[in-house]
Amino acid sequence: MCLPSPMPELLLTRSCDYGCGCCCQARSLDPSGVPRDLISWEDLVYVADFLLASGEPRITLSGGEPSLHPEFVAMTAYLVERGFEVAVSTAGIRKGKALGEASAVFEAYPPQRFSIILNLDPLIQGDPATAEADGIQEFLENFGNRCFPTIRLGDADFDLTDPLQLIFQFGMSRNLSVGLCHPILGHGSPAPEPSQIRAIVNRFFSFADLMERFRIQPIFACGWPQCCFDDGQMSWLARNAGRCDFTCGPTIGIGPDLTVWPCFPLNRFRNRSLFEFNSLQEIIYLYFDAFNKVKVEAGGIFPDCDTCRFRDLQRCGGGCLVHNVLSFLDEEPLRLPEVYP
Amino acid sequence: MIRQSIVFPFREALLPGLAGLAVVPRIGSMENIGDVLNTIYRSGVNLRFLLVESERPLTFAGLHQGLAGVPIALEVPALGPFADFFRLLPVIRQMNLRVYLPAGGEGNLTSLRVLSSLGIETAVTFGGKEPDWDGLADLMTYAFFGQSPHAPIAPFGYLSEIFDQRGRNEFQAVYFEDPKSYLHMDENGRVALTSADLKKGRFLLENIAGLEKGADDLESFVEGLEEWRNHFLNFDMCSTCPGWRTCSGWLARHRKPDERCRSFFSEVLDSLEQQRSMRRDPLSVWRP
Image (tube, rainbow over all chains, first blue to last red; front, side, top):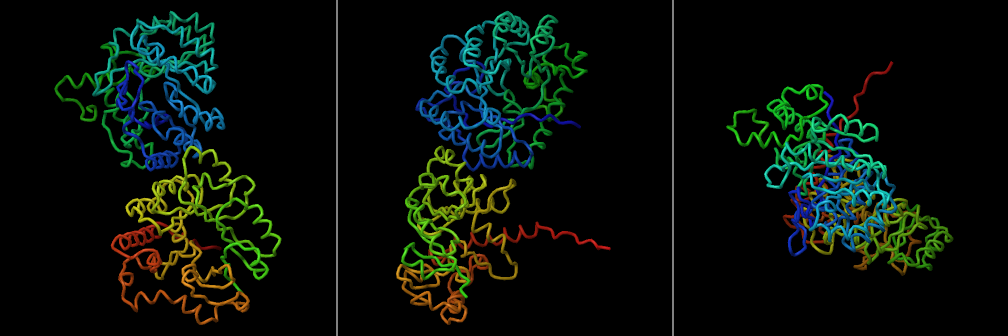
């Protein structure tokens, strides 16, 4: 069996001061400004050892907002010095001291060893995020050329003009990762109904001209159902070197307390401790197997998914698995035990 | 012939008497290290390593590119801010360096683990503040069983190398206190077996010249080597310690033995035995 090899994601803290609409960690920073649930150095060393012993030299540092961790710069530098290719998933390092420290330390690292997955959600989510967007300029002046932009779309009412201009202006990677907001297990964060996804896709492609002008190549991340894209949109993606991943598989998240889970929307699904495993492959296998069992029980987010030929061909995973898991919770528990949280 | 390295406080006047010997000059900071090295190299002594007893954290101890290749044992009270440390790391990685950190210093057990995982050789020192014994046991477990390659953490790495399941295992050489490997000299040229003897004024000889034929035949030298027997003659706490074979009463020089150090060194012994049992001897296949 050929297992996927996702880039594991480590949360440095669960606190976040950004207000991205479809995130369960949004605005979770204590009013005192002191971040909570911080990973310790001992645990960080353990994670680094664990991944290297598993033959995995890549890691994404995430949160919450990872730059809120008081040791963010040092911990990131540590992982780079251990030989990892580190990607930091952030909405922008805005704290003055952290930004100054980060600039001084990270500039020595080549972009392939240290990159940034820049979450542009605060820029496209309207009013409350405007103030946050102002602070991002200084960050981009320092790190723009290391940034891989990403957005997550939660409804059809969005404007990509500002994010696309920023990508162009600050020399970010032209590969724009486009995610879909999904419901989060155990959390009431808003997410679009499956029936709204087609409208979101159509709205996205209404910016096709602008993307062509700025040479932006969108990459649709996991969880998008293929049937929500029409042939014209698929053809535009192919012509403009865009990509799409309509499959759904575990990506492996590790919490500050070394809890593990299969992916962000399922961060409360069959949680285990990293200490229970001997290698990353064991964790991937556990969740890969659980995902397959969920897919046996329910084909995807639409009733037609069960009989879809693209699903049979493994071209499409039928949307994000969290929809299926959530639907099981509303029924009598008669399914395979592995499919329940 | 003198087999031991001579540990002495750096004084230019002492160098002529040490010509041809292996020496460990002790200095208090890195400030004038260039001048110190020039003087040592001109004097005809063999520099084994420099022992630097710095009062500043590692990050601010004054390490620089020009010291690449110079063997240094650097005793520091702490690591210093991690962010500054990582700026210095490329320099440290080029150095022939072992960093000594006190186990009782705040955050030092974490620093030791981080340094080791980055490939920098370290050593835990005792004395001063009481260490967090549980944290120290975790560090010891990491040193013996860490799943990813890392630099040795003395004394655990050293014990692992020399461990003899049937004998005593002494690690005081890590701290330059093994009379078979090191002798100590004061600023007046008097020689003692250990730094503790030096402080107490228990000298082996008044002058290094008296050691021309080596120390092995000196009665006080042999007595010093056998001093560990006093624990059994006095029937003190160390004499009944299950971890005796790893500590040999060494820690009793720094603190009053108690249940915590007994329990810790028993765990060290168990870990060493477990580690040894995990190492399989290569299967010997017949050869034509």
